Length: 334
Ligand code: PMP
Image (cartoon, helix red, strand yellow):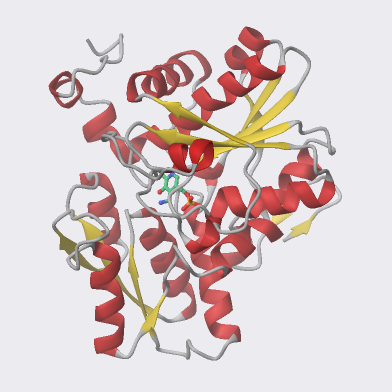
């Protein structure tokens, strides 16, 4: 990325346009807590999510290792966003993408993946211990095809991407004044990479995992108990195991956020601050508010706005879907 004397940026190619996203101060969350709460606007990435960074980091790593050659094929199991990132970066660099995804993910992500040319294989949603789980299906498919398996959960190129980009960006954008960082985990790449980068610069930065209802990670951080207790309407986050990307990473605390609390943030930010964010970003903002309340006024808390609301229009903004789940409907749509 080159920056003109007037501060405008020119990207050399798609990869160069990934990352370097703004931090947006969340006014109401900040006012309510007396802190400065910032959301990193990952929905502004070319593929619309934080996972563009992981896609690019994994592709670069596979290229450097000599695994991915011109005309090569990438296979990945994903809730959708990593598939979008991998496919777009793959398109720009001449790779084919085979994407395995649980059929329960949003219609919008499925349509988007088809639109951008991914070879999409939808599979029934199964727990990780089941051989039919999308992660295992993608691994076997990569083996059968002699293709590169991106393996975002255990491939440390994922967290390294965040260690080298997202984390240093947050440090720089807050001018080193960040007191706490919180975000939810799918692969854990974002939380792990940012934790490593921030703790290297200031070991006192508080790293808090935000977990959706039902996920095992909250219990894992709090009491080393990974029991899965329920489910959430959010996509791309929550775990029943500890992915390789989270291993050995310092996490100071965890909070568990119910869907209704996350949705309140999604709706509030939409209607009062013009920010359209997805469910995991809602969990993250709700967690940032809790962390800010814990720390007390005058602190700076950063979180991640992982992707945008349009990716979940048929769910989070569909009164019928929400009523079916016993969840609040956006007041202006009720
Ligand atoms: N939010 C959304 C919408 C996602 O798709 C993902 C990735 N599956 C995450 C959050 C979690 O990011 P990570 O994999 O880096 O933990």
